[in-house]
Image 1 (cartoon, helix red, strand yellow):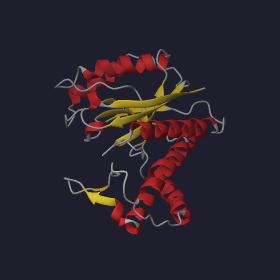
Image 2 (cartoon, rainbow, N blue to C red; image 1 turned 120 degrees about the vertical axis):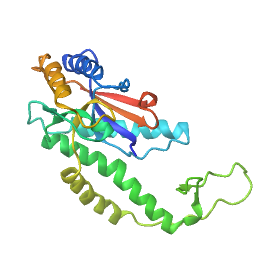
Image 3 (cartoon, rainbow, N blue to C red; image 1 turned 180 degrees about the horizontal axis):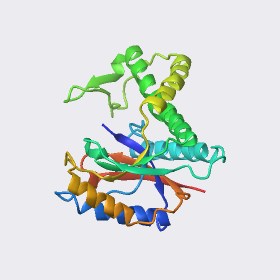
Length: 248
């Protein structure tokens, strides 16, 4: 499950954006079944905690996360030529990593991903788990067997349910270590080129892939960034950009 993801994208109409979209469109034609189209991006993290049930809260969450993410990225040390260093083309069995450019695990990129993972994935998830223990009456089970928060009653009468408060200090402390482990063991920055179920990729197709990639002059820098929060549910073509912010 991807849920809401934070993407690092090149700005439109920049050399790197144009070259990536060109090669992605070209490679798409080599795979059967019309693979879905999507923007060039590096996923910073998935499963970001956002309230999607209330439009006003969704907007508040999106604005808060993008603002904090922009500050975090702008605060990274300026001790490197480029945050994004593109490597070779690779492939995996997974649909979402069928064909992709490897991206070097630049310490600043990894540090940024770790911060976002800690603040907007691990801490909210772990606080929610703890809340389920302290306040089980606030939750119910949906038709799929998942534990979900009860919707507030529309009736104005009656007293609101009692909520037991609890200390989150230890949760936040542990989240720092969890995020650090994730950034080392699991975070795998890459630029997806094609989403497909095709497997394996035979040698003749690989020759075509390498030929089309090598036709592009990749001597360009990824230097103008946009951060986007994307709701990645259902078909890829139905994914929704919830909000974005330019990084100057």
